[in-house]
Length: 46
Image (cartoon, rainbow, N blue to C red; front, side, top):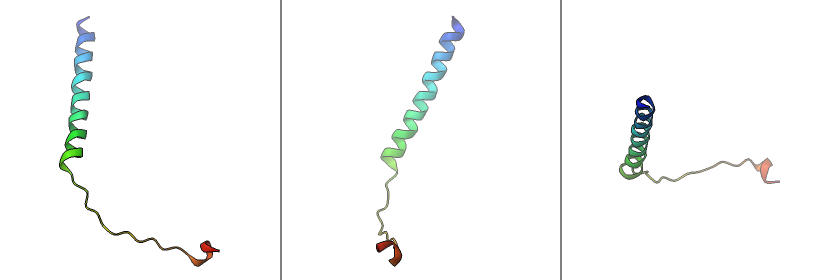
């Protein structure tokens, strides 16, 4: 039974680290908007 509790605690710590990383990326990394251009061949328009 102690190994099961240790495994559950380990999974909880890993899940907490993943959640913390996603939270940090979502709140502290700001995307920079930029203009985008796409070339379209004339053959594709016909």
